[in-house]
Image 1 (cartoon, rainbow, N blue to C red):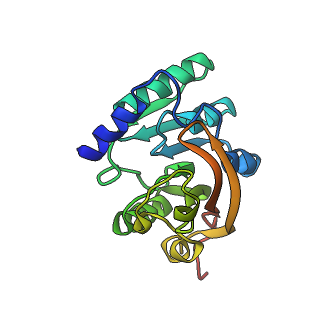
Image 2 (image 1 turned 120 degrees about the horizontal axis):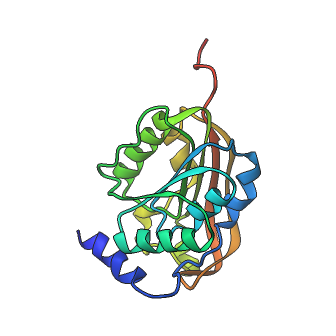
Length: 206
């Protein structure tokens, strides 16, 4: 519960800690995504969910912070879009099977064992042809100190992610240094991993 309360406290402010604009990588790949049902996990104050809702997706935003999800609802109302919010923990969240056209994970940093389980569930939860969009900090981010966890075990590389997403086709899998300017929570040069992975429409090995 401590983790959840920490984010409730962080989001308990009138401004949006990570801004109200979408993540730049998500915005870059959005034209490649099939419009349909989208799930944004650990979406904080809802900026990425609202962006997809504005593009015509049927969006579910989930986060462990009730305060964050309340702010997501306010942002959606201000932008005149509808979406569903769920306060839930990724330890026990039911992704469903073959349910989503898009799943988005932006700066969701998890302990390795939980991350592997979540990514296995993501793979199962995507519809054939559905896409997984991820951006996260790499271990090099600790040198930049412009956002993200200070615990290196929560940071990831492409090599970490490849086996975890083995059921998907990696269309983008890269590590880059870029300027991340997303509210006061993330500002400055940063080392990130970016993934666009698509579930095959035909079963493997046929």
